[in-house]
Image (cartoon, one colour):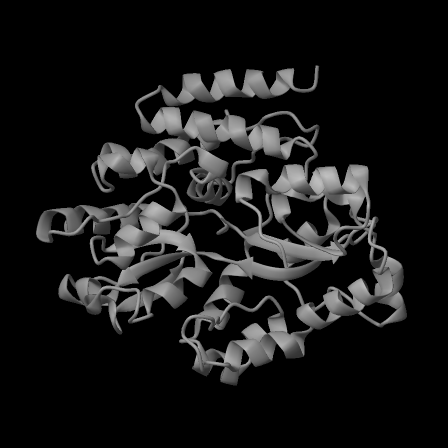
Length: 365
């Protein structure tokens, strides 16, 4: 296996697909890149049919990511996938008489209470523009308020009253001082590290981080047995929604060993392989409770070995969504990430969203 820096990974994949040469056989990619690179990987529908493999054991957003924007085809099988969750300090919540929130207003009331009655950061937020990391919560809040990124014609729709209201609510975490000022430059690493070190009472992040938060070799001692996980809050009268992140794996067109490559893909994505890994707790450095098959997320033994995280992830995924499977999404993502960062630093919300919508419309001209 060859590892590449994340920022250079897409360029490497595109070059391999375009130039060929058969250097690599199997590819693993994040959901956002699927529409851009699917020209370089083999559609899997025929071999899946021959081997009796379907996507029925995966939740909706994982199946959508597997299509890479083509609902008639499958280009990759889900390999890793995460729900987006609220992690909180159970000891602090118990001290203050709190329960996991069901609405954003309730959550912000909790953050205010934590701010006034503890010495912890109420939230370890992340507003870094790098790799779209400030979009995770924003997208969740946008969708949870009944708003959309794009309308049915593909035009920007995030200037609607519901989208503006969701954006303003998101930015309250910064503007009300619930997250530190320096979190305008924090990404996933910085925000989760702040929680990991015991400096924050809550963090919104991907489900896999529970493994770090409960690892005594990584986490502050006070986190031991004190990390709770819940689905994200919603808005009253609206259906809950959150972003689900997916990594896919498939076979490169340029592979000179496509049969063997497909056998490998089948093995690493098989539910039995995943279950075996999820139950193996012999090495804390490699243990993982993340599963992408519904059958594993719902299995009592897998849940017992992983603090109930698989069931929590399953519950969250049932109302979760994939990011737009759009060929232009990587460019759009960068534009939106800059916009959210600038609003976190004080830019006017309605005006900035309108300006960004115009900029995205220009991409099609």
